[in-house]
Amino acid sequence: MNETWVFGYGSLVSPVSLASTIGRPIESHDVVVTHLMGYGRRWNYGSMHLRGDWHHDGVTVRQGLVVSLGIVVADDEECNGVAVRVSDDELAKLDWRERDYERTDVTDVVIAESTAFAGDRIVTYVPRSSAIERYEQARDQRRAAIRRSYWNLVDEAFAELGGDHPERYAATPAPDVPVADISLSIIG
Image (cartoon, rainbow, N blue to C red; front, side, top):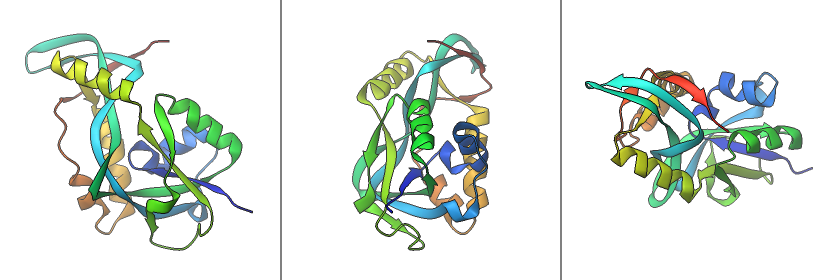
């Protein structure tokens, strides 16, 4: 029976974040450390539903855009992360969470540190162009920031992977928006 795995490259690397979405603890046999070839991680996703208030460098922003990680096609890059085995119901929950990303089949461009999912399907979430455009517009208006709690969550998730994974994650191009303590609000 072929199964579905989801490649996580940001907050989905965190077992706590992932479990909060799919509704079950993440077991070690359901996680494989992987590398996604031909993609690069970027701070380029502008949330459709999260806004927030923050103060940074003498500027107070009200209802600014919350920024998260995304990936872009980049032939000469690779992106480390994890692949997690999910059921159809769990995939539907992830689709809802990542609804402004495009679910993309990456089976042929994932290299795993084991053969746990040989013959299975692997998908990931790539930001829709509208999410990138939303981010670029808010960035240019100085109305975009990354939540410090999100920043720390992703950093800690890669630290827990051990090996050279924290350094690979740290090689992600630096964001061009601030990391701030954001008071969140949800729209729509």
